Amino acid sequence: MANDLMRFSVAMPEDLLMQFDALVARRGLARNRSEVVRDLVRDALVEDNCRVPGVEVMGSLTIVYDHHSSDLQDKLHSIQHDYYDHVIATTHVHVDHHACLEVIILRGDSLLVQTLADKILGLKGIKNGKLVLATAGAV
Image 1 (tube, rainbow, N blue to C red):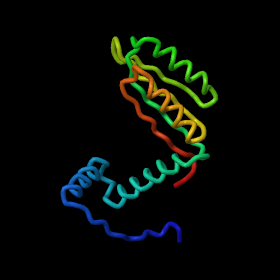
Image 2: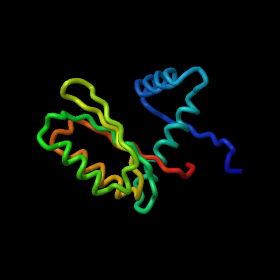
Image 3: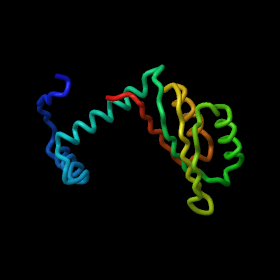
Image 4: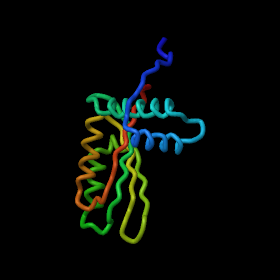
C-alpha cells in the first residue's frame, strides 16, 4: 500500500546527528527523528517540484530595502505592474526610518515566478530577500 511505512537506515557523522537531534527537540514533544525526516523529505520534494517548468506555483517573496535608494520604489512598482496578473498582493512594513520590509504574494508558472523574483531581488537597494514556493499538489 502507498501509505505503509518503510524502514531504512541513515549513516551520518556524530556531530551532524547531534545537531539533527537538537532540531528534533526544537520541533516539539510530539516529534521524533522519523517525523522530522519525513517533513524534510516532503519539503525537498515540494521545492524540487516547484522548479519544474510548467508547474503552477504560489510564492511569497520577502524583501528588505532602504526606501531612500534612488528610484527603487518606482522600479519595484514598475516590475509589479508589468506582472500584474501574477502579483496577487503585497504587504509593506516600515521597519525603521530607512528600512522597509515587503512581502509580495506571487502566482504562476514556476519559471515565470522565479524570473519575476530574480528581477526584484536584483534591483540595486534590495538589502536581502527570499522566495518561498509552494504547489497546491500533494507530495
